[in-house]
Image 1 (cartoon, rainbow, N blue to C red):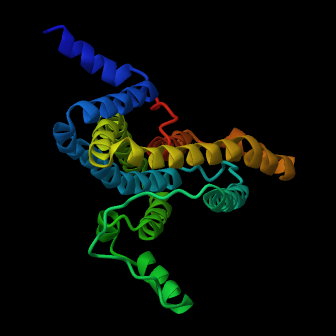
Image 2 (cartoon, rainbow, N blue to C red):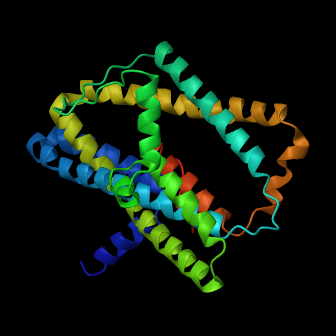
Image 3 (tube, rainbow, N blue to C red):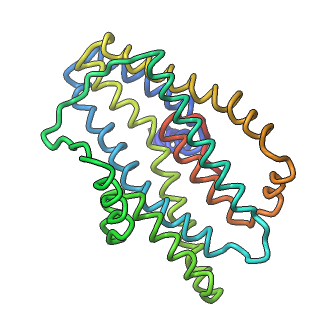
Length: 277
């Protein structure tokens, strides 16, 4: 027994995250079929993981964006204009593919009704007004409410201001970023437990028939990701001027922050990436 517990901890910390998630998925289905009452109680594990993921995401975005801008060397040519153009075009094409896929493969999922339903904006004026007020939102309130427009506005402003700070201050920001990275890795490592709880609760409540709608949705999501990765992105790179794509050679050392941010959101939506070493 004394050897088993350290072995399980080592397996959770160093094992393959994808394999652990698949194991949690299968185990959740088996537990739900064998012990439905117990499986419904396991739903708290899934809720805990989702809450932790929602809590760490705003802090991660705020710290990484501010640290990346603050530690950016002024002499480094990163071709930020090309990065922004590629990002906007790629995001638009990904959204377009997702919309077409949702119409080609419609999926109905039973959701829990909430009392506080969001109302649609009354017009373009209200949309612009909400956008402006989200930009100037209180930074603490923006992080607490996951207002990413306000988070980006404050993190960019703070990052630009920190560019003129002393090296000691920038070192503190770097250390803070490393600490947040450690917390993010820990939360991502809880994904198998969260998947186990979510799957167990869903199967115990709706049965395998209700689980099939999630499987169909996951298949559509993975299909869209494969289409974007193998067709849209290569086509975008092929059509974009090749001389503008040399900015990747001059990225600063903080490029690891952007890589972690990308890995984090991929783990959140598809669990296809391993944590960074």
